Length: 173
Image (tube, rainbow, N blue to C red; front, side, top):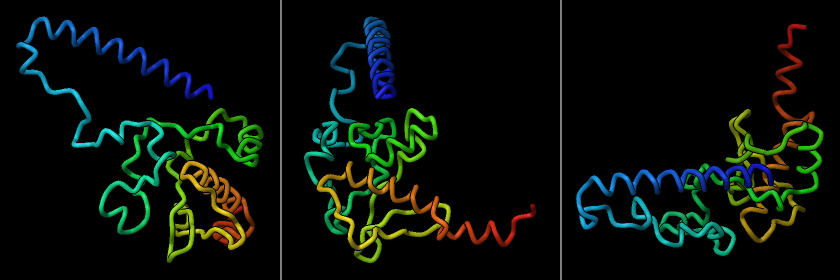
């Protein structure tokens, strides 16, 4: 939660600073009618500005997302941090043991689907790790992403991870 507070303070300072500089620039520049209209950039919808958009809705906004039945994750704002109130008990304990205050190295891990099965992508092995059959998936995407982060960490720590075999085969010492 500390990171969210720090980001909020940073955003407030940045907004105040940009408001001052734009007020100064506005006094020196052309009339306001020549200014760029306010509103979302790059044709983004007003709904995309709602910070809870992906919690309140399925998040399938484009035709392609509806077609594949999955949100395209690279469209996320990279400055948004996960909601730490949704951390799983395993992730809370993991952060305590590691002495970390955030999970920023896992911020781009999302639950996806491979061949119709829920899965998370492991970059270390360049492949999908499917979610076990008995796991009940949460209703919203943020909770699914937290579950994906937990499963990825557990798989990477597992003796069944392919890098364990490589380590045993090619370790020098």
